[in-house]
Length: 483
Image 1 (tube, rainbow, N blue to C red):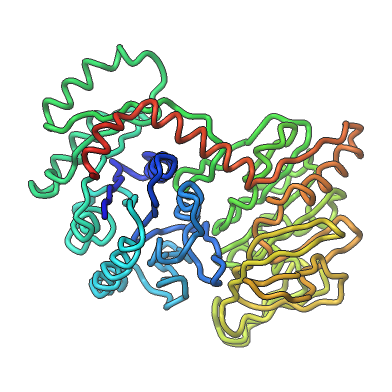
Image 2 (image 1 turned 120 degrees about the vertical axis):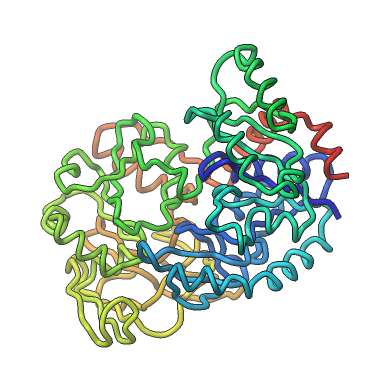
């Protein structure tokens, strides 16, 4: 079986989308392709059909390869809970919470597991597209590396190094990365990709020639800055304004915001403007305010109250939406039965928008779900700790969890404008998103519009991504590396 690895000179160089592009190119050329990232640190995660958790980047890459996402494609997922601590998820299931120093020692034990997982996938596919993390030249982390050159050695894979020219200093970052590697590691880099280039390539040519000469590695592609509407990794998201439309949706940027891919679907509604806000006075022009998910619900709830969002939300007359941790915060209280985020048995008062109580106890809940909201079909996934019980009307009817038919009621509605749910991806399905947006349009005197399903639009964007990268990458050289 063949494999190729994408590494970057830094975080946000474009590794994830480059890997997705190669997955789409290879599958369009008739290969059975599988993405792989041994270790991913991300607060954007997904729940597979088996109820297992994995990073969103590998989900996108699996969709690019036209296969069902599997936790084996991302066997280790780290979800930061603070500056020094994270939840360690192994093979899709929570393993433990661990300090960074402790994990650095612990990960030595994971090499055999990673190798075994990779080998099991490699046996099933013609082509493996592997993504690294951060930079391979982090010299303080190299001794026990399991995600960059350490992974390339496990897979015995050639490496393509991606540098982001849009940030400036791309030649220095390429040269510095290569020179900080050991000779046997440098030998694995078979090509360099300049990413996010704007302008006339002829102006760049002298720099390309000089960097090739200095590092002894060929440039295999100069990829233009691409306007593709696809999910970004955590580090690539700038939380700035999306769109310039007449409808304004404000997402509260919690200190530990998670699963902000929940709002990607709005990119395809041209009259919708999504803003990430950090102060309550920014709400004044909003049509809808969303309290998103959080990886540290209690901390972020206290932050909301300290910032003054409690009063601002209670006086806001538009639509309010709480998702996952945001839904928990909207209740009357949170009881930490087992001491997950507070002392055992401690109670934190919520925003009291709903008359509901959340209890932190039991195992983490991870379900892929389908259902309906007021007759409109929805799909998504639950991924949360704790259970919420209240007296309000339920928000959604769940008809399928994983592959099992069910009939369960979930979430809460109040005044037909305040909603709470545990379902991530709730806006992805066109009928429900269209219903919400057309309600706002009607109130603002705007014409109703149809919304596109995110899955359909994502497929179109992946085709666009693959075509642009194919046109600007030396695919003859790429295929020579993997055959």
